[in-house]
Length: 270
Image (cartoon, rainbow, N blue to C red; front, top):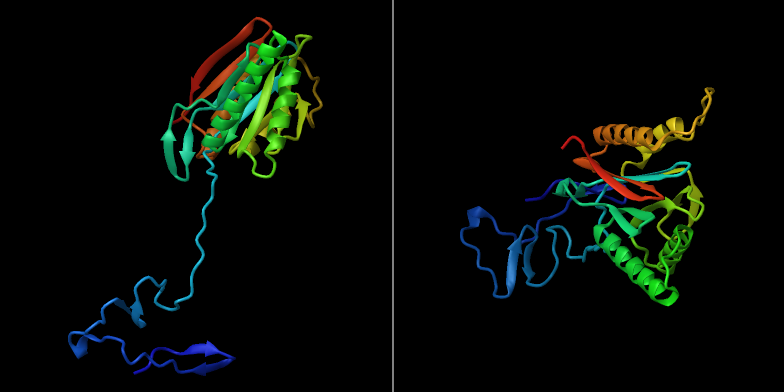
């Protein structure tokens, strides 16, 4: 008997079934020791066989995992607001609903990170160690712009095997003004008034461009108080959570002023 036609060299050819293919009508089939039987006949143990070919197939391993989440940072005249949701995901699975993406570095600055949780934890540990060394050497706390530069250097140092962490950083500078910094994965950064990163970045940035930076608007731009900015951040995360499955549960909002850091949480749809 023959199996269906196969196309080769623009012509149909008959592919004969191997003579040693077992059929139920033949009765019990004796398989030699050290071999297994499949649709193509008897194959030696240890060989890779898909039932069609004995060629090896590719296996892949990734050291990274994307655990989702969204971070937002907004700079005001005398304050900075940094917010992030608390959902930790992997694929279609929620691993935690209460995992903070904010990390306090000094009393005047906070790091927000989305991406691979293990890389984020490692990055935080490296930054904490560097800040302790600076504290011991100089007997003072590192300023916010100095921490921003150190973070950029730390990410660039790992550029050939980057931390899979997407960061926003913000705080109060020496003049008491809000300072927000936006980063890519290998340490390129800029100071800006508004930034966002993570899985919901594309949903949040257009809203912030409209209501915070006042782009493409004809009405007069005004300085927003921090209380109003906090409410806008809540609205942004509510909208983002409706569209992004990796953003949800609750949002952690940190307001940084010269008097310190105030952190509040706001429940989102679970």
